Image 1 (cartoon, rainbow, N blue to C red):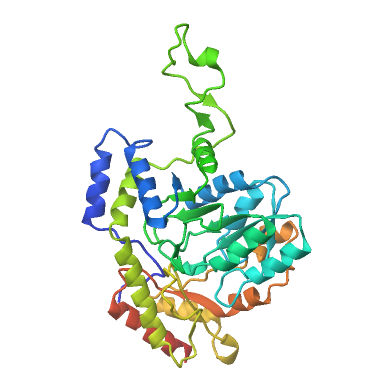
Image 2: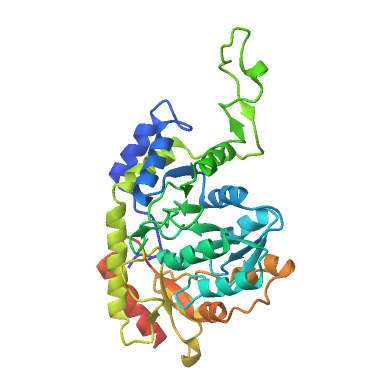
Length: 386
């Protein structure tokens, strides 16, 4: 059996042809494919606006530039990739780590308690962990009750739904971000996007994506026009301190091709999740949450009580790798990372997160995972654990 990783991309000849076609076009960047890709994101998520960028971290950074000010307190989860809370620090704001629920998502009831206790909290950054969408009713309650800013990190959840609300639609949030890394639901190699329903935010994001440059609505008319009132065709103005977070046309061409297969990708992930659920029924391996059709399953996470076994998690990972199976851990608690401990974090009361780190890990989950490969993963895992 060839090595089975926890996740990988699916690229076919249609994807390759789309990429080659764009490489042969006059535009490699800032061309028509970018807007076409953004329109497709809007169509799929039901958000009004989308801004495609170079990667998911760039999306988080730009979103934070819109929402945060220095020293703002932001409730967020310790169970995510570092980029989520790092983006808060980029603005000189302060993450406040809140414990998770048993399903891996931030505990919004605890967020409610924090907001009651501290009226100086300005925002919440929620993560739809593993593809499992955040409870939108609770999100709506928090936004309406406390009038706070909300960012949804949907890097895991493209295609997920909560009571017919699409991940990334920003129904009860200000902004959402997406990631198109190779292990995600669709890939552009690297790449990301911000979605919003706020036109002002959208226009500002477009400006920040490209060095803070604005090519219309000029402030200096005497510089932008000639003596006869004609607009100088070379003219542009820098209105803010922006970044070069642009995405290329050939990346967007790949993304557009991937979109054609996205529903099938998500269906296959759900089928794999259902197979895992069935196989682990009445075993020592427990799914992080039971299948309900809402998650788009970027990850399939399981729990094992290692204290009752004669094997550690590290031994399990190593023995599975010998068997050509790659497990992964999503995630090490962010607040326990050396950098975060050096700036004062690490002693938060997060018992569910701490237990999660001890017991949970991710199994292979990607559309091209065959039934034979999945069965091999299941049988090998159960055998090694016994």
